[in-house]
Figure 1 (cartoon, rainbow, N blue to C red):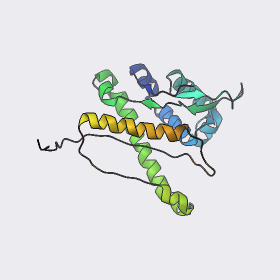
Figure 2: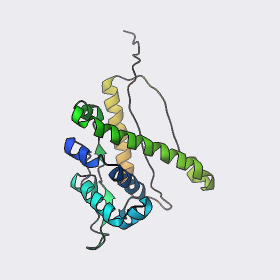
Figure 3: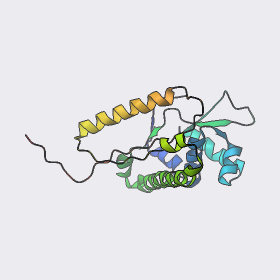
Figure 4: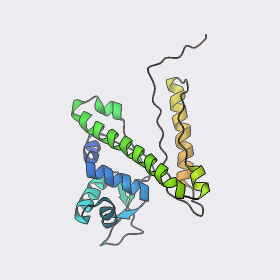
Length: 191
């Protein structure tokens, strides 16, 4: 199992850019581990179909087989331990990749929105500690490209530290999503 992020190139992008594969990957990330049968039930698909698409996701480095949990008959799949990076802007420069990049990015954004709306709909039934733990923060700050890279490195270190640590009692899977997106608005700097 790899702990470094998988940087997606054109072949992996094309392997990912399938609606069912994107749904499988999102569901597997939410669960942490699952069999093809479990994912098929959750998504209303046959286990044969989910099994095929999980093998394709594995071939392209998005999921791994958990050999400690599975059996020869029923594989247990987990998301790639190091995650993956989609250099969307670079890949989209090639017109041959543009539609696939758009499909993947749209699916990710839609999944983020659906998760947020689901949390909002269900949170009133959760214990207070979990309601208080759910956070969405949006802010704008003035940074140069070097500062953005440094911020990204620091955020990744913190996320990796928590990802690699042992969960405490009552732990749940927690979605961590962040965007570092420059705007068109330049900041005047004195000096």
